Image (cartoon, rainbow, N blue to C red; front, side, top):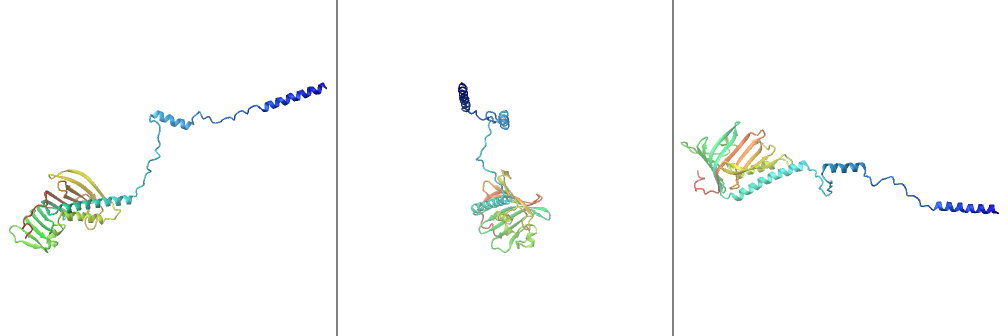
Amino acid sequence: MLRKSLLLVFATLLAAAVSAQDMQPIPPAVNLIDDTVPHPSAQAAVTAVEESGSGPVLIDDTATPEVTVDPAAERAAERAEAISTLEQLRAGITNAMTGGYRGQLISEEEIGGQLARKEMMANFRMRPRAIRLEMTSPDEQVVVWQQGWDTMSVDRPWLPALNIDPAGERAMATSHRPLTQFGIDLTIDRYIDAMKATPEDAEVTVSHAGTGPVDRQQLDRWDFTHPRVGNTPVTEFTIWIDTATGMPVHFENRKADGSVYERYRYTDFELNPRFDRDTFEK
């Protein structure tokens, strides 16, 4: 009887011990990642910034992404700008030149591989169109032409006056263009036509090269380049604009090798002068 009692007590104690062990709290799982220790690569980046003294690196996520420019579109825009610049100049001439102009002109044109130089007093009337050139070099002569005339008058000292075709062989022997195409306005028209004759994606440039004194005048310089057009060898030209009148008074046309093909320079330029009644008469 005692033996059974002892066995019962022992079994009861053993059951209590096991029960107590089962109720012990479960230990937390082992954390294999230590959040308190920076990752080596991150630590290296922080160290590099600290050593450089540049401070924290800020990322601007609002920056505009890089835009790829189409070269053909860029060339077309440059060509359009060149044409627009010349057209604005032409419009200014139309608005300002109500009467005409007068000035000393030095003309140089390539004839027979050399620049042929002429010096003259140029008188130009806008309406009706009329030109009087009083040449002093290389020969003294007065050349007059009016709109509506089939011939131009050539008056030389001690010789009879001549009436010759402005576009004839004799007149064109020492000139690139007939007298009927004389004038600042038509010069700009030729530049515009040359630019418009180039392909839309042609290599065309225009640049303002600054302002400075030239031949006792304050002039604005504009440089243009374009591919060769038609029969002319010109691929670049420069226009100088008189800041006092807004009129182009110097022109230089150059070939691909940079040599001068044509040069026209006005000095003592006078805009809209009063002409005598017989200035443009034969």
